[in-house]
Image (cartoon, rainbow, N blue to C red; front, side, top):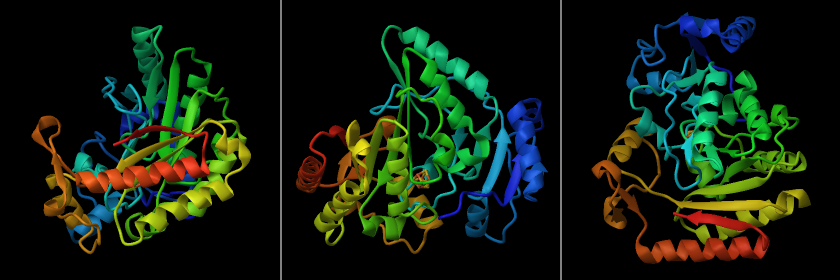
Length: 342
Ligand code: SF4
């Protein structure tokens, strides 16, 4: 995906037009000649066109719903932050392994919330509650927020909001390279801008509809030059033939293509591939031809919340992945910090 996302269909909740961003988006989509419809609630978009589930799923992934975020109670977001800050839900990407497929169930369309001020006010209250402790907010728990921000600029506003705050920090991760409008945001070093990266095999086979690795690295360079603290999430770390070379080559490219500024305050997060039984069912339905390995027999079961456990790699495989990736990180980025391996 080289071009920024343009929805094929846009729904508006009528109340969203009471907000400046709602009005702005309506004008924008009218000019872009995108089909516009109205819905009583962003949770009630039904009758999407399409002859079968697969077609409807595809169209839903390029449908944007402009609404209001009513619940201003934030979810927790361990281990990378204290809270998830909700500016959007859903994503136009088609990563086969994406957990949003299960969490969004029958609503795979993308929702953006125009009451950004109210969301930021709620964040301020969370910060006050935890003062004098710092509070970190993760903006990409339920979407790839950068992927739609060229349309809404909500993330940009949030970056500037946290730029002014004393006790708040913002973080998000993306697989998209459309970052230019964020480069002049007054971030004040309080936002960690992360990119999701992977071995070529994983990107090629399982991440359609996202930006190519070289574009992500190029964007990471721009972001670093704009003074943002930078991070990379390697996820999902996936065993495949030649994975050692694949991940080595990924680190090598990152090191070669990143400018020196990008290597100064750098963090890594490592997340091994995992799946749950419900996720497996949804993946096989949405991407029936996927090569993604989802064999419970080959994995280790880890008990999880609400009784839904996940299948992760066997202990030795996990150790092997962990030690190799850690070694590569130290070799190519001796000053980087590993935040966690999970
Ligand atoms: Fe999911 Fe991220 Fe891929 Fe979007 S880019 S489909 S949020 S994994």
